[in-house]
Length: 147
Image (cartoon, rainbow, N blue to C red; front, side, top):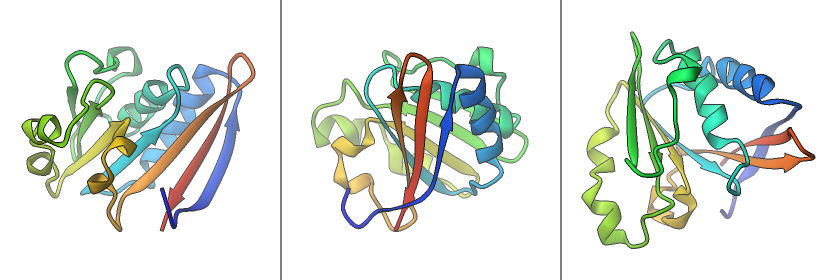
């Protein structure tokens, strides 16, 4: 995604560390917000969402699962509603429109979107991009990017 600069980078060495990083990251995210989660299959996107959901007291890590087949999971916290969205199986703008993502972006919501880079219209000035890459068997490089 053009014109994006890395504002923070960290390395985690296990799923537990990635979840813990997500918990801490939640304190830095304020709704309304779109967060694009980029990374290959198995890069740790859903694992990071587990920590973010715990950080917002919206769900326990064990209750957060990949929305690959349901497309959207909703987790309600006391002050924020998280929508965990997976666009892996969405191929066209028309299919994207049927999800009604614009309706979900409300003052108290954060959209955590996996595979969102497929749809440039999701990239806005306030969008945060998180890129996850595997580094070895259980390590992850996590980069936060913004304009």
